Length: 332
Image 1 (cartoon, helix red, strand yellow):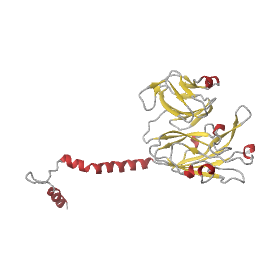
Image 2 (cartoon, one colour; image 1 turned 90 degrees about the vertical axis):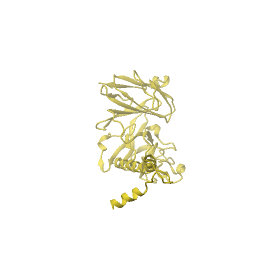
Image 3 (cartoon, helix red, strand yellow; image 1 turned 90 degrees about the horizontal axis):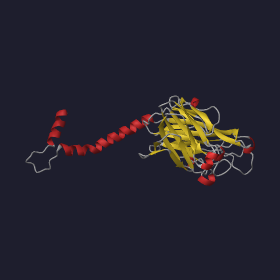
């Protein structure tokens, strides 16, 4: 068989006296290029699939601390999170937190997220007002049944969880396709509770971080939401993935000379001017060093620094600074 193949290959060689077009090694390589690209593409798909994980997540929403003016805030709490059957729930706070749990994903993952409603009391007994909570996410892919909005908006269903006899659903499941190209930091928030815009302003918001395959490692990651009068934030340990420091204007810790990453997400209606005293960082997508960034509603900004010295982070917008939007960045 090998001899026959060799004869066949030889038969395709043309003599110098032949009128047929000569095929040089260069031409042969060009003819093989489509096959090379196909092999590379298939290899990429196989590698990507090997990294893809299936996330099964259960969140609930409940009442949490007072806002200082006698009004109860609402917050998400992680009930359970597994990746391909491995339970990682211990990474999260056992209490409801503002911002809600930060969900770390990798491109190629699939997420099945169920929301439940544990909000009780006066919140749930106002006739004619929606008392279901939902999860509306940005950045990743999903179909209309996972939009996390009311039927009056999506024309299909009330895509949230209620806890009374009038509830369309007592729990609701969303499916997210964390497709390639969705890497980044994205918000999620309620879209249904009490209004068509939901109760993001009462604390029902959180973040997802979608990492590309082979993403660099950071010693710490900090998620900071910029509200109209306070930072709401937390940090993630790069080794244990444990989340901590939730709350208003949190103190963030780092080991000297370690690489850390900040994730800023603006909410509310203000334009913010974020500053990390004494630090500069690369403006994403450019080669420019900056020491402050303007960030408005629904915008986000992610940057990395090497922790050299302790500093303050703040909103240098005059009115926000007067409201006390400042926190500590402690380097030891």
